[in-house]
Image 1 (cartoon, one colour):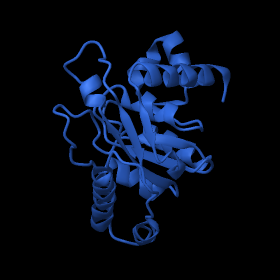
Image 2 (cartoon, one colour; image 1 turned 180 degrees about the vertical axis):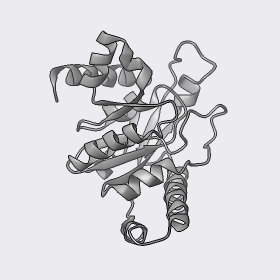
Image 3 (cartoon, helix red, strand yellow; image 1 turned 90 degrees about the vertical axis):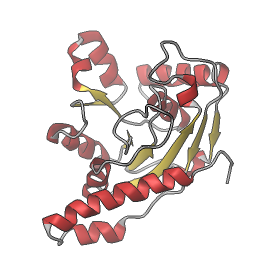
Length: 212
């Protein structure tokens, strides 16, 4: 890991270990090499650093393009392997950068719900994550964060010292749908994107706070 990334990674692990008393379940499900999509539920600003500091390999993050306008902060985000995307994360430029990172064997964190939950419950998946999965050959690892909504949700200004747990599910195989997507009509292709997204969200929903 580059120095700035490694320093941030260590600091985050200390904060999550001391302040949030974190638990990491089944981290062995994350491949240490090769392209990986870490697909997680999204309840808090804590979710990206929680996931990134829980794995022992570099990951790529998504960050709003507007944040890169601040020179120093933008440089820091780039040092953390952040990909600039538009507000909805669906822009062609952002998608190309995500796919480039995956093509180079990187890992990236994606949130199928698209935005943070407002009530702590899981939200329906958007098709964007399905499009990314189909257009890449990355392994998809479902991830579920527990307790982050209680620790720091939309209505809280300051994070609370609540215990958080992160569970990594078993990698998912989309070989058949990827093969179908190469020859199917456009209407079916859109259905495949949503089908993939729904399958990922279903796996996230099945994850429990117990070790396998």
